[in-house]
Length: 242
Image (cartoon, rainbow, N blue to C red):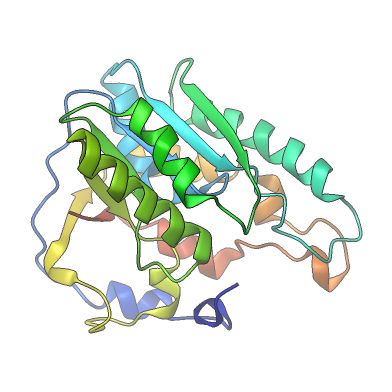
């Protein structure tokens, strides 16, 4: 895990007090391919957008689950890695259903959590993308090795196919600060969310029980997404990088 992700991170109040006038993201009329390094990243980064597409009846949304997130709790006293992987696959299906997506195609690639094969992922994404299609993927500078590998693979596949890369930050909101020079804010676009979209995203995130609640009493069973982290993803808008 990157040292950028250590500690409590930048508090949400600091982000809320910072209100740059980013341009609004134009939502595609066709279904995107959503690439998630771990189960829950697709909802954290783009749950509101996916809820909007579901409400509009947009067919053909594909989700690429790169890993099964089995390394989220390496010190767990409750679950083995295999058991966590199985639980997180079920949680993904439930979360997508809570967003309103009916029978989305989930491509489960089974890359090792913490060891994404970037070249193999690029090859797989190239077979799933077409010219002009949106590819939503974690940002290449997000501070987590898996997130950055996924972002690079998506960028390479988009360059090869002519697909349109849209990156979503996750851990950036933890280690960065308002107006941080390490973040290309000039590339940012915002997507204002309705109350219904925010509620759907909140409901979907709650489906990831292994991530938002303690697995047990031991320190190694603590939630990965405690309330102060979840607060960063309960905003009235989502942010993306073009």
